[in-house]
Length: 402
Image (tube, rainbow, N blue to C red; front, top):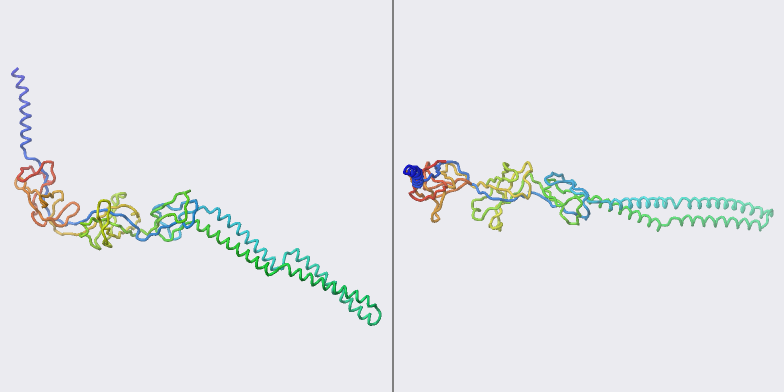
């Protein structure tokens, strides 16, 4: 029994000793050294891309979308077709109008020739016969007049010949009036009016066919498209947006307290989560003219011009922006994660021997990861980084350098 108790007691004592040593040992705390470096102070925020020059294309006439000729991101030239509306009705109207033009021109040609060919030929034939009869009757009258003077013919024969001449001349006058009546000034005016009306209908139909093709008024890139095949467009409906995006305007949202760090001309770097690893650069063009609400934030809209030579930064995208506000050479810096606050005073825990001590610091500009220390630390000082162990003045620690 004594041997069994001894066997059980030894492991228990070992566990108790291990727990005691572990609880009394100094905690491991990560540290880093204060160092000098070139500090680039940046302001990180977000924004939205806009084209530098753009136009919104809208439908001037209603119709069903027959063809969609472009996609978002596609470059287009000035006058390039974007959308083709159905123009079957306009083409039918064009065919009918062209037929009316042909008919009106034919009618005018008939009028210019004096009338319809069959009627005109009949009158001309009758006129020819009447003129022939008139000539014969005229010769008879002259002959009989001489014979009557010589008493070789009777007065009755002369009178009959004279009547035949008068009838022939009357027939000629009647036929000439009939021929003239075939074409009047009113007929010509009406025919010309019908031709003008038909030609106007042709131009209108051609214009409607041309209007069915919706085109881009500028050269650029299609960055928004609001239609799909088979949909119906009413006059004024949006079709697409086309912009010139070799350079883009980025509206960067800077929190109100940070606006003092921004100035015109400062360099800007843009990243887009959709294209990781890509960067676009530019500069601040214009400072905000007021403060606006952006969700729960109060921000100023800083306008930046960004180079976009490959046209892959598309308008409307939400981006990340980094404004390089200041560069400090040979700055004494610490990681921002090492900074703590006590009573609104910034400071760090510094390693002194095997214990830590609180040290107030005065801060200068900062980057995303590091901050400049103007006062309170020296180069090579070891400062504590965040740790699982709670830190306090005078705590003995086991430093682990990173």
